[in-house]
Image (cartoon, rainbow, N blue to C red):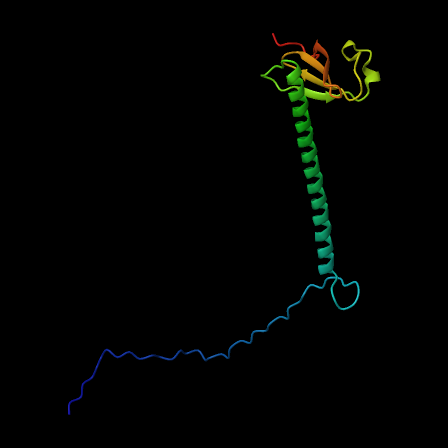
Length: 159
């Protein structure tokens, strides 16, 4: 029998340091932050959060409704102004290139000093065309034009 030796063998050598026992790791206990409790064993904070969210929701809903009402009022006023303009257009030729400002006479007695409003009554409509410098006093109750006069806006013309 022949014996063969293998010179490529590798041997593991043991370390010269003695093995130390594994270190013990201590776990620190978890500390939960304590929120103040007003009464009993249950916390009040979730209920306070719910109440605040409800209050904010109600406030925002109220703001939404007020904005919606304003928008409806403005659209109603613009529709009313369009109706007045169309009725006046049947009585007199109006400038086509300009949309007038429509106002309502609330207290005619305060306006009597001005010649334009000498025959005005409460509820009359005033159509003011700023570019054309024309004002029209219209009485919706009788469907009549009371006065047409040149309008001065109080602004100096650009030259």
